[in-house]
Length: 325
Image (tube, rainbow, N blue to C red; front, side, top):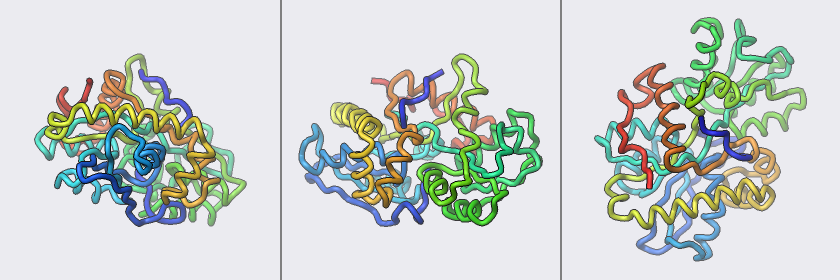
């Protein structure tokens, strides 16, 4: 089983994330990189800054959006060459494009945390009979929680899941009711903790996932980096250069918290540097490639497929889905 990433979804527009797209222009022949605002793009900020200064091996054009559907449409219409997207949607795209998607790396591991203020939740089984507020019915937080409930012996009706349209609504529910339990991704976890000193992280869902895995088991994967197979075939050297620069950028974010937080705020990913700095260590930003990437992602997709085949596009991807240089 892959080791948990060193220090280090979707985030909807709201209290922390802004809704406008960002472009960092480069030359006409630039590699077009699209990303979702949130932890996945936090790992790109050094590369974005260096690209703006002309200090990268490739020429790049970056765009960040807040809606996954918008980014996926850009991938299909070939308006971006490389994209950082939720892990399961990479499999969905692979099936929709008849295999024209390749995963380059895992850019984010688990970013989900259970928050409460009552001190009663010490394990997943303690959620029995409780109401949990969360976002995204039929998305990663929903499926991850359902998997953890099932594997801890809780039936589908043992826990009431109250879905909200945005993470900010979960934050509001936690603020309004001291007995509320909420499932949130970073950086909204940091926002909620900053607003209510009584709140605590009751469960780290990455840790709970890892407890269920045996040797060679799956890892909780949030985001991956993809490209089209036809683009990779024509530009493999440039793609390899991107992977080198992406890894260096991820390391920068994890190792230079204060400077990275300033860049994250400047780029509009998170409005306040202080929030970004506190959130980074809990975001599991990484750049896992090759066989290690394949093992972790393959196991994760198999778990989702076992819950509902539609989560991965109806079928598990073939071996060519995983790019191994």
